[in-house]
Image 1 (cartoon, rainbow, N blue to C red):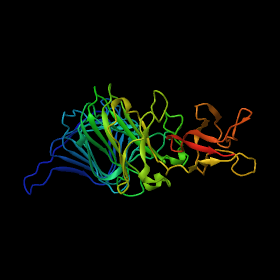
Image 2: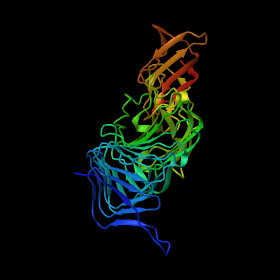
Image 3: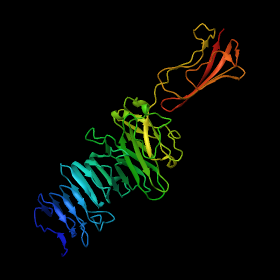
Image 4: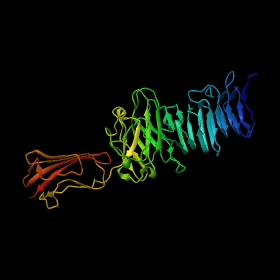
Length: 424
């Protein structure tokens, strides 16, 4: 069967009309031919565009505009679009108010992609935009990756809607992959939770010191139940932090350059994510993959409770690991330490120990010393106290020093010390 190049050329003479070829409500199935759309020309497809493979594979040489009102499906052995310029000039517009799918069995590499109205569903492992991705709809990443290959901050042009990436690591993360390379600037990723019609999970990645070498940064986010499960795929525990005071959301910011950039990060969260945690105590934490800990950096950040955002200070390239979340700090722990006790066996105030409220404490150590610095009591159990003896002998009436150490429910290491009067 012969193959042909379809040239979309429409000549016009008056009224300043744009040239176009309109396929009204019909699917366009390319069974391996080449389509050339010249600069200034429009190919308007009222149904699906379906690209198939054959002797030369279906391809589109796009210098004009291609409007697709239904699904864009690529089953050829190529990325559909060829002869992409250094500054891509071809535009694919997907303007339907109904759901439209980008899918097939092979990646599509768009020149410029503009999605308007309705919901767009990414239904293949990856799609790529070589020029500008303009977002004016809901774009459901659907456990897949949308790749932006230009490193300038305007390569993602946000108008309205949001990127939806609310699937967890077990289901597969939805990812925006941005080739930031060694560029400086403010890179905005308009994530949304789906609870509204806008980007309520907007993420700002402000590069302050450029990376060394080219590479991309993967951005993703997902919600969790109060248990904070599942954890990001490289994380084994939240310790020393706890699920009770960690918001029900994680972010993934995975930089792949030879030397990562340094950047400030602004996280947006929803009220549901907070799950009762006091917003004005929120700070950012990240998981160090090299030593498997959350607490060697931070908690850090400036909270804005009116905007539901938290802005970190500059994160050094050596601290820019990929798994992030926010943790809260409680009010000062309710721990009462008496200043006097009388171990006279009358059943009242016979034992000296900190009285702990409902707070959960970990790594608890309680010590008592005499005035010469001798340790006369030691315990790691919150329900044990000093009975006024050292070994088997009663200690004399005097002033003693205590030291209390523990890690609070929010992961903070606490040290308290003071004096207690032993009265006989």
